[in-house]
Image (cartoon, rainbow, N blue to C red; front, side, top):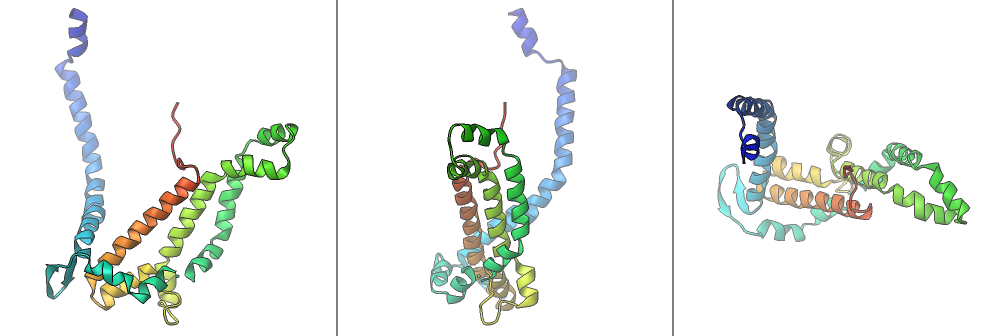
Length: 222
């Protein structure tokens, strides 16, 4: 009992020291957390609310339900922006960067694996499917995610060079959202498109992660 009591008991001095350390840590984190809350969490929550409302700067907000999302299903510009020719051009532009990522992944594969497989009688095709491709999955996941995100969010390049034209040939969802909000003052519909855009990017990242084995980016612990 005496040993248990001694272990459970913490001197007030040690408790005060840990409290001061915790307060100091939170003081350092507070500015970053406040900025993250102010510029990330609150706008995201407001955007979700706005996507279910009918609102403009000079009009009283009213509940609209799924009206914005229903309109999106019949919006030809939305579907044209979703299926943006810019994606192919952006992937081609970043091809060299992707090759560096894949080359780094290839260099991290131990040569002993290929030697052991060759000794066991595996030909080049089987070595590729059994060794190279599985061990390159994290690199492939990174290339897919970066490529899709860059293709969907190349706002500055498209807006400066073409503005989404000719017609809607180079329109992106991000440029379409900008035009809805700041050119047509349809902030409610722009919010709905933003929510769909966000869900789409999360789904792409999730599917790429699943295709790469489901644990891309995981940290191994001993």
